Image 1 (cartoon, rainbow, N blue to C red):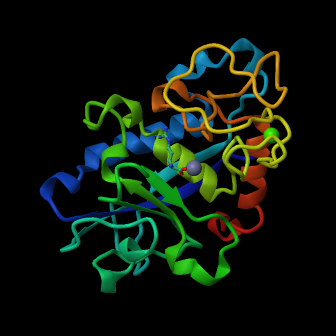
Image 2: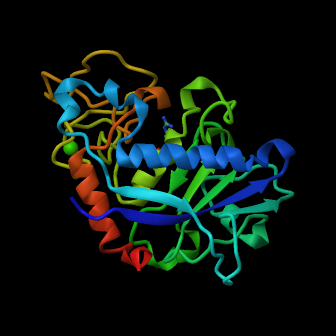
Length: 259
Ligand code: ARG
Ligand code: ZN
Ligand code: CA
């Protein structure tokens, strides 16, 4: 197995109301979820069906809150910015722009930037993919503030309150496509990963049993995968193929983070 990779993370909390100014504890709870999911120590790994268990892996990636800021000063890895903007859109990068009421990125070659704010309820989160050279100041993940961490720190509705939006978005940030592929409803598109079953379209809510699409029987769609759209409580794995892809990204377009 590859060496354990440790990624320094900075959370930029951009808040308009006190409720949006989520606590340090809620962010620590998110870190714990990420470290469990990317090391496959998540308690719900036992819910991975036996027929997919051999495909599931430990990504060997861990996340730590940054302890040194870009200017060399000590930090707890959390910045807090009060904004007059009542919400932020996923159609622009305003949350990442000081001149638009957001918070500027820290050097993407040294940190994973995660912005937390009042983006739309429906979107939950979004991420930039690797290799977006021209927009380095926008590189990273954006999370709807209510999706961060787990109960008791996270009071959001139970579908999306287990911190898996961050797991999913970091999957994108490390190059993973949605498990059903880059189209919406198609069996001829792909997620470019060999060991994930070909899948027609997203799965929502919490499926039970086998959902066959794209002739992927007998086991069907891998709706337990972090890169599907299932509820947080129903996702529990990355595959070895996805892990190899993320590791390759970390060793190529995101290799500056490792030095
Ligand atoms: N819609 C978002 C995306 O495609 C996030 C989906 C998160 N899903 C979840 N169960 N938390 O990136
Ligand atoms: Zn996604
Ligand atoms: Ca596949």
